[in-house]
Image (cartoon, rainbow, N blue to C red; front, side, top):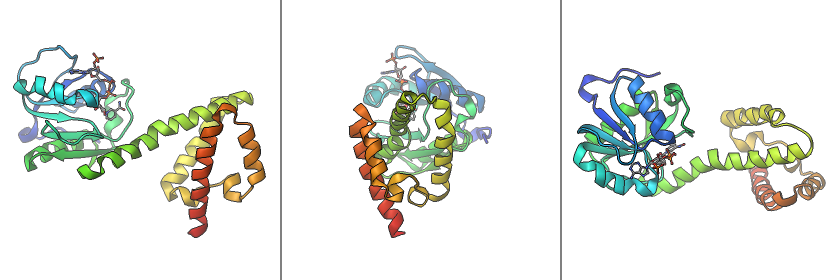
Length: 241
Ligand SMILES: NC(=O)c1ccc[n+]([C@@H]2O[C@H](COP(=O)([O-])OP(=O)(O)OC[C@H]3O[C@@H](n4cnc5c(N)ncnc54)[C@H](OP(=O)(O)O)[C@@H]3O)[C@@H](O)[C@H]2O)c1
């Protein structure tokens, strides 16, 4: 659910960076009632705004901040891995964006927010909640583990799913037939956590079947070994429960 920004906290916003997140965020802020410039490319000029949100790669944040500072009363970034550094506030939507998502994509997702002052944090929180996000704080000392969690939950899941798809294709089975299995697994994990819902040969202690799977994994053998070792640990936690 989104709500109209309150007049006291309705800043004019420039979104800098017309990539995956910048494009979607600019559209969502506009749809929520903010006055938005952008998404703007790297050399775009804009009139002075209350807030410039830097949707640029993490390594470009400090350069983009220095460039935008004269035109913006406040600066924000949207990086999960980066502390405030040279900006005033940060809003990290805990979601994956490919650039084509509708404005509603923000509704119901989490967002790590931070601010240099109470007013900066209030603005980050207000923008997040106006887009329907659920804001939370992450201490700077835990930023790297927070961002690694996001990579495990999204990037690495794709790596594993791509391996699953390759092996299924070798067996003449299409990706579509894996989808219900993946969805049910995620639902089970969301409801109860991984240890409680683990099934399969490792959970059953069927090492002969695991060895046959390993032999069939071809160039994915190293990935299989790493995942099998981690899954044995998980199965151990299940036994301990
Ligand atoms: N995509 C996601 O799923 C996601 C999720 C949460 C948070 N984020 C955060 O969002 C930020 C952007 O990520 P992204 O995935 O949207 O990256 P992206 O698709 O690579 O887009 C980055 C954009 O920034 C532009 N850019 C680079 N340097 C710039 C500068 N100095 N001034 C203005 N524009 C500049 C790039 O333009 P050029 O093409 O000209 O280089 C590009 O259009 C990162 O901080 C990332 O951590 C992304």
